[in-house]
Image (cartoon, rainbow, N blue to C red; front, top):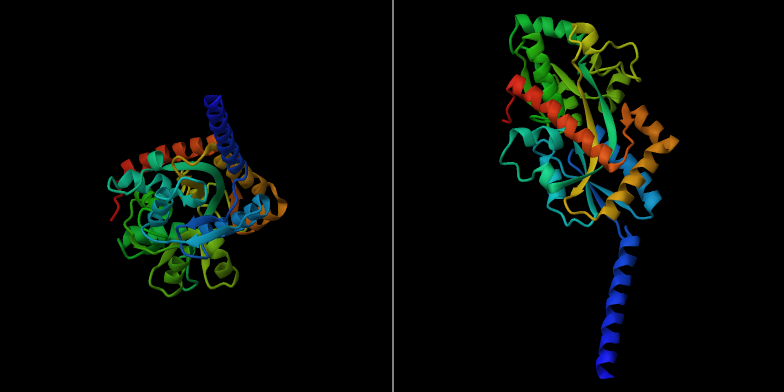
Length: 326
């Protein structure tokens, strides 16, 4: 009889533990979620993170708190995500550079996306624009490239970091045009724009989301849309491909939601569902589109396949240009 009672007590404890575990799983999230943005405030990645985090907070009834952790071409912030507890309570807004460029260039990078990150959802596609001060004599990217061809390294350009997507796109363009331009990296789009505004650099390649206020106020002028299509915000601005004849050239970026490897599947599913609910909302979509950002709906598998294809594309560009991480 005593043995039977002990067995019943043990069974009850197991069932209770199982019930608690299931309750916890069903209750995700039951506390605030950190959203690591690996760039300075004000850029396209930051805008994406804040707009979608706000909508996810409303959907999942918990605060999604944005925390900016810039530096090292966004790898500092994403490394923080990779090393976080894999419980779904720390996520990151990871862009092209930290996910699909720097890992190809730096074997000593402290994280490996395939090994250390879960790709949860697509967040935004980021339209880009080539910018300059109104005083610059050249008024198009075609004119800039023509000047650069006759004046090697006389044109300097700003981007949001070494080996970021804009840097890679500029190296690709330089090779196609057979010119030499001087790269000046900054810690994000906003500092890069400041560099152009002060005249420290000749031109910049940044997200249209970051540049729009300065273009609207005529503090900057647009030289070209990154492509592959014209910008919704600047429909009369020709793309680089239109100006140069480089038909396959396109400069753009993207952001995906990531977490540490081993994040529970139920948490990934809930986060993916919340992102898709967010970008399906008219007000969220409008906010993003008004900043030159395009939504990227799809399940986690779609996001993972998208990132894999982008890694393969960037590897081809890196092999062709020989770009290295400084």
